[in-house]
Image 1 (cartoon, rainbow, N blue to C red):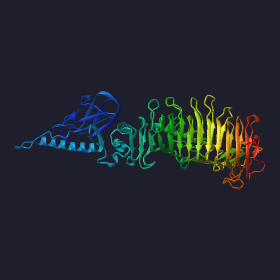
Image 2: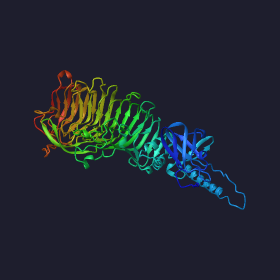
Image 3: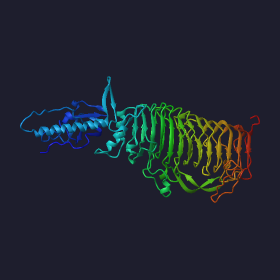
Image 4: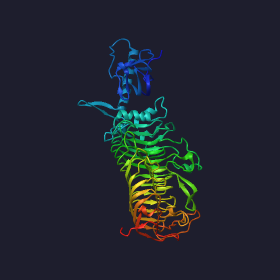
Length: 613
């Protein structure tokens, strides 16, 4: 009959249980149940809460067996060996050697050393006064406290990968480790990556999660099995909010979304196309939360649901939305500010110094501008860079965005939400297909956003973007009440700069518009919206003053003929065209122009000159 040995083996097992009572283990025991400890979601059970059974070996001991809980468990179950460091035998001098007893004594000594090693890896427990303290990392320095109360949980994830039954989902070990560690955790580059088949969760308010080693040191891969759910959820949808949680340095990846057209023919469908509301990271009920993350893919990179004062800093490269192919329409936005039935409409959120790059470019496709057709490449990043559906006092501060399939910033109010006092300052918005800032209220039941302030921004169409600004009211609904723009610069747009058909009051002043209408459409016989500013629809009470129109894309006096694709750096022809009736009370003053690139236009057509301005 077999006798007990103590191999170099893992002396613990973890399970993700759902109403489960029976758990098999395969490591050596000397005394059976007395050598075992069991916990559920980090809470240790009493010895009376479970039983152990297994085949008894010759001379005593077990090479494994079955642990059975008195009550079914749901959650993370951990079972580990703990052989108490006590000498159980004392051999008096005699004429014979008790080989079996000596063998078991050596087994006990070896098992005790093994358990001590694993305990040191887990953390040495001791007391200061009456307070229990765990000093981690005595054999792995990167497991130590890392300052600011953070505990490194990388080892737990790596260890879980070595267990039988590991199915490639690192979220299980991550979530259990976060629950056990408390509100402050970090991940080290030693973990290599995280693969997520289920959502990573930070359900406790005011949790801090730091990924060390820079933004791409620990990439978080979104598995195809995660379809329909978000990659990470901070706070809870219906319960506790994120509070002042911090997520720093996370890098999310949805494979194949970066540079797709560099490796595939146009129209090639994306694998594992997402069509729901999946985000890489959801933040629910923030109260002064700070989110600094990056990556690409998913429907939204960051979604902020309600709450107050969430500062989001993103570095995004990629995501795919091709307007011409349904099988390539996935990424909706990089940052979305929206409402929550539990956590409200959100207030005072800030998108701080973002870096948002579309990351996908098509070959040349026809684009119709007025009576002209030009052939230009299309930008196929996410549909929007920043999407504002519901938020009071949102800010976009500094940073860069470019390469969106539609617009850099989308303002599309949702029913039950609220949008007011949008501020965009010092941002550089480059070549998105349709516009840089786009506002459209599609439903009368949705609130009309109140006050959009844009200042000190640079808008560069890069001979790709149609316009810089579209505020639409073609459906008879105002999309912005009180538009305030000052000190902005615009250049190199295929059509005009501002299409304003749904503005209810405001002012535009001290602006420079150059090198627009690069499709060279004839505004007098074609589309008047190719003017620098076109006012139409229901726009009213908009005052414009101190605006300079015309010149080349570098704000100089250059004029160029169209290239072989129909694009010219300066097709400017009209400054301002106002197609609204006089009672709309749209006024202008002190408009100037330099070097219009096409003949036949003028600085202004229509509207009311305000000599008192």
